[in-house]
Image (tube, rainbow, N blue to C red; front, side):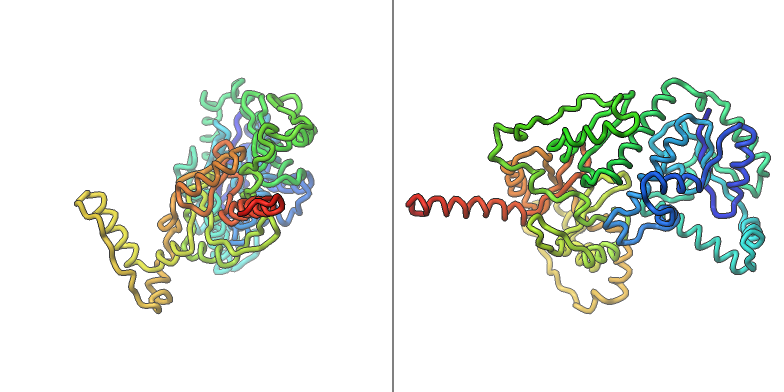
Length: 464
C-alpha cells in the first residue's frame, strides 16, 4: 500500500483529509507522534525537535547544524514508521523527509483564506484579526524553513503529485480523488518498492545513531544501503574501521547487511608510508567550519563571517577568512571571502567586472584591461549597499576549483594548494565534503618538520 504525505497551510483541513483517508484505506495516520517517538529514541528534547521542524534555521543553527541533527532523528523515526507502507503522514515537511523514496504520493492541500480564518477563530478562540495574523505568521515560517533548508519554495506545485483546492472541492471529493490515485499501477506494492523502503529505513537509522550516539565527527562515517547491502566509508572510518564496524554492528538490521567491512589491524594505517601525514590528519571536520547555503543573502553571509570562529588543531582560535557555500543537496559548491562580500556591496564594481568578462570572452585582443576600484567610503553604508546586501551570496561566491581525498598525503595537499593558489582546500569522500584544510595548518605542519630538521642538522654538526 502507498505512502501518502500531506502538506498544508495551518488550518487548511489537512488533518481532516488524513483522517478520512485513513478510514477509507485502513491506513495508519501519523503526525506529531513521530516527534514524540524520536525524542524518546535519540535523547533529544521534544521541544527541541518540535522547534526544529516548526521554525526556520537561524544563523546559529546554520553554523552548528542543530536543525540538521534534529531532522536526522525525525527522518529515521518516520522512515521506520512508513517502512511497511499503508501510512499517511500529514504536516511537518513529510515530502522532504521522504524525498529519497520513490512512489510516495505527495499531496498539497490549499484552502481559501476565509475558510482558514474561521477555523482559527473556532479552534484557537481568536478574533478575526488575530486569526489572520496567526495564519500569515505560520505560513511564512514554514515557507522560510523550506527555503533555507532545501532551497525551494514550499508552495511550488512542481513538488507535489496532486494539489487540491478546497475552494473548489470538498474534503469528501478530495478523499475520493486520492483513493483513486492510490489504486493506480504507479503506486501499487512491488518487491522493488519493499526493498527500497527497507534500505531507506536502515540508512536513516544508521545515520541517526552515528549522529547522536557515536561521538564521531559529522560526515566522518558515511553509510549507504542499496539492495540490502550496507557499505561504510568516510575519513573517520578509513582510520578507525574496527571501532566503527563494532559500533554499527550493534544497530538493529546493520550486522546482516554489512559488506566489505575491512577491519583495521594493529598495524599502522598505510604502514609503508607511516612517516607521511595525510589530508585526514590535518583537516578540520566539515562541521567545525562555518557554512551557508547559496541562496541566503550577502547580509547573512557577512553575519556568518562576523560571528563565527574556527578552532585549529593546536587549540588556537581564529576568525575565518572564508565561509563555505552549500547547495540544496548539501554539496559544497563554493567559498566566499571577505573581499568578495565587500565587492558585492558595491554594484558598480560588480558591473565593471561583468564588463571585463564580456570583453575577455569576445577575444578582442585586449591583454590589459584595468579599471579603478574607486568609490566613496560612505556608499558602503547607504541604501544602494543595503539593497545589494539582499542579493543571494551565490552571486559573489567563488566556485570550488579543486579538492583532495582524505587519504591523499600532504605532498598532494601542498601541491594542489600551490598549483591553484588557494588557502582553503575541501576534502571530499564519496563526493561529499567531510573536511577542509587551511593553509595555516599546512604551513604549521611543514614548519614543524623544517624546524625539526634544522635542529637535527645542528645537533649532528652540519651547517645550515
